[in-house]
Image (cartoon, rainbow, N blue to C red; front, side):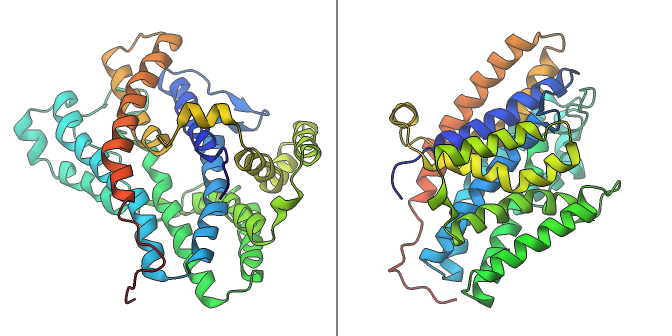
Length: 338
């Protein structure tokens, strides 16, 4: 793929999650995008849109089950495993109200390791019990099982039929379930420690990204297309329900148009350091720890401090863990038995 802004876009999305959560952790009202969507949620939807567009390309370039799953796993699990171990072995013992003996003998400590295989657990014993978002060490991890489930659906769709109509059908199914159930359901439906409503709310944007790639709709992206999508979003702001529905098509256009464009300045700034995943998985525990240690901290200083420590951890994660793991991605020429 030619030079693009996807690294910058992913970092913007992770930054929106960090920024939006900061208000929540300090007991403030989270900023809302177009009077409709919390900024943190917007960041997650941007991630899923990008993922749908790029992951569908990955499968189409090499529709091999094992190689595809290895590539996706190398992107998610090495950085995640280190983050979880650091939380259990360093953050927990440091900030828990329990003694070291009680902390490590508590069954919830071992249970937190279930996050490694994407069974989301938020609680470590005695950690962040008095925070405004109580007992949640890393609330951002909920999206990872949803993301991996989308990868599996891409595989299933690709194996069932190489035709692009199946992606269109899945997009329609996600839109309908999202509209008639997920957006309106008041109670969670939980499977594998995951709220199934989120599967459809996030998955709609994922499959919009898939659809844009499969039908080459990005060929029609232009300044006028993007401006038209932005104007429509702005015009629909007073009509929340209609805006939400329209966003399933309009937001991916704006997101992917920016991602597919090329800004030499952004490319030079970021280089080859894709720290967005590290920012996403480390921001929540860093923010919780800082507000735990300094409960009266002001928003501006809080944001600066959170960004500093999160970006340091993300930089280390990318350079020491994630980028090294990606060196093991199989090429299309290597032979694997499925």
